[in-house]
Image (cartoon, rainbow, N blue to C red; front, side, top):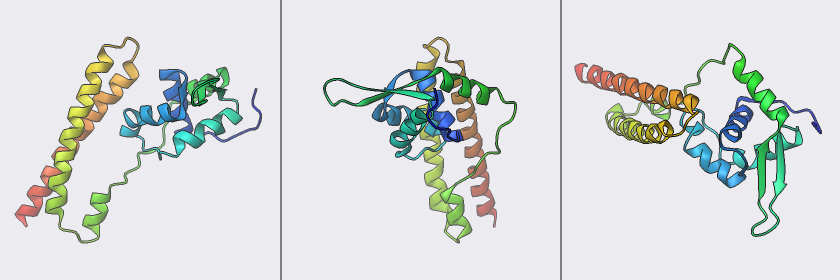
Length: 176
């Protein structure tokens, strides 16, 4: 039962999806799970892992259980209301437009020399592809993880395409 109505944001749904996928988690475990999954395509401030679960619990979307011993951490789990809200949101046939926040492009816009920035970015994209491919290998071993597998494949394709974009930008700069 909801104790107070709250507005769900895309980040709220990200946390609901995370708990749907992984089950009951502490805020620290949520932060760790975010870092190796959702944050690869949906940036989430670290404080969200500590604030948003309590907010979602106050709205009835998560249950909260405090551990009896040890560090007495609070563990959060998806409620039926949370699962219903997540399914309704995920089943909507529309999504908001993508958001591009790229400090490299902002620096180039501000007049920075793109050469060292682009070289570093290309190396970062290549490392990210390797990281995603290692996640993909692990996900393939887990039955029922087709959503994360598709997301990882999409991420790999995205980073490969961005390598092409930045290599083309580099060639265009050389041609000037």
